[in-house]
Length: 359
Image 1: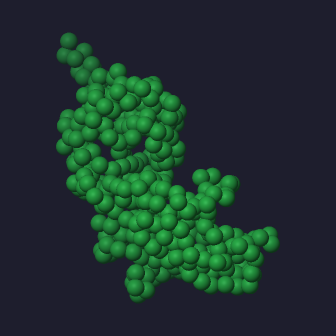
Image 2: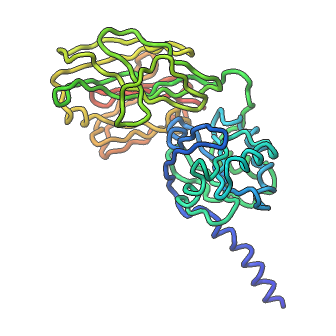
Image 3: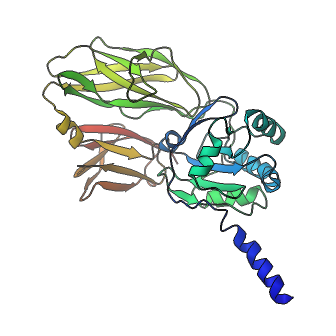
């Protein structure tokens, strides 16, 4: 009898092993929650937030028990406005069932139903037991493959704090800022046509941000929801909280070399975009200095990666050089834990990108 009890106990302990997400790197997805809000995983991560995902279904008893504790921790970490962004994904429920669920349990964060892509996401992540709660870091690594058991809200809070995530109040007013993914744009002639960098406008506030317009006679700004489709005038568009807008600059006509500044205005403030256009710069020269910077905003570190990043220089907001690195491979991790909160610039070759440090 003792052996039988031991066997059953061991089986119960091992059950959660099979509940965890089997992957350690996140897969991107775009979905629509049961209230019509669009959710893009990598955009949230690239904005510098961790992402907590609760995989569930509405008739699951353990899910019903765990959800109020998860909701309580959501309020403890600032209601998706700070270090971590919560969402939940159902494997089998439609919009109506998810809307009722969210109302009953006070879920304010996105609830993605099967209509919004929930079942496909659960399958992609290999989720076989429910609930399964995972945590994804801004570098897209899955740092918690399953948080269980959830005895109380403090279980979730402690687990997230172990990864440097800090508690915040759910502030009623604006708490963030609007950030451009880059402030220096490189333009060149590509197959006889003028071409420029794209950049993103991140709304890290809790209010809608409207694009007011821009000032330039040489360039125009448009937006795209699809990399292969351009042409929508960006003026007047609204960016919801925690969302971003991909924007591209187009040269009105092929010209000689040009350097100038464009003023780009939003309801949150005015940004200056420094533009360099070279009629002689070809695609190979452009690619030679292409690099990415994430997470952005950064807290403890920022990762700089690209094909040819031999020399990396970091400047503060007033143009003072604060660090320089020689890189022997295609990736550099910079410790930003001792950086003051604020705006910084990374320069690789002729290209410069902006990043923000927030602790």
